[in-house]
Length: 165
Image (tube, rainbow, N blue to C red; front, side, top):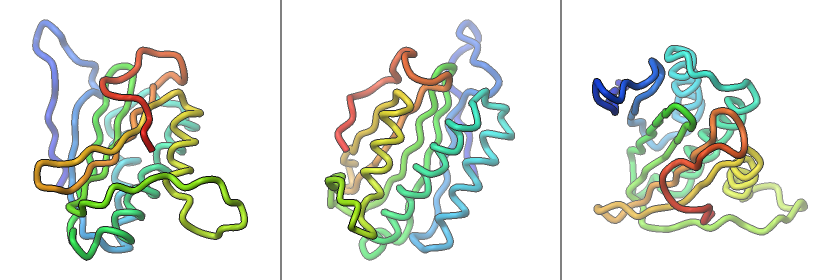
C-alpha cells in the first residue's frame, strides 16, 4: 500500500532514510489513527533522525489534517491521499482530497470546543521552524502540506512558500 519513490542520482546519493511515500485511505474516521500509525511506522522503519518532540508534533499534524479531510471533504472526496517526503534536512507531510473548498485557520477562541485543527497545525509548524500551505490540484481538489526541519528551527527551508494557513 505504501509506494516509494527515491529522489537523487548516483552522484547525489541520498541518505538511507530519504524518499517519498504515498498512500491512500478512505475518507472515514478509522483512517485518522491508521494514517498516524502508518507515518510513525514509516519514520521508524526508515530510521529518520528526528527528535521525539518533532515526531509527536508531526503525528499530531497528520491526525489533524486527515481529520479535516474526513469531516469536511468526504462527501466530494471518498478517498484521501497522504504523502510523506523526507530529505536530509526536512520532512514534509501532505494530505490531498478532491474537495475544492480551501480552509482557513480560525482565530484563537479558547471557549470554542472544535474547529481549531488548522490553527493547531499552524502553531506546531511555526514553533518547529517549518512552513505550511494549501495548494489546488489540477483536478480541482486541494493539498494541505507541512514541512518541518529535522533538526529544529533555523535550517535551510524546504522548497516552497511561507505559511498560508
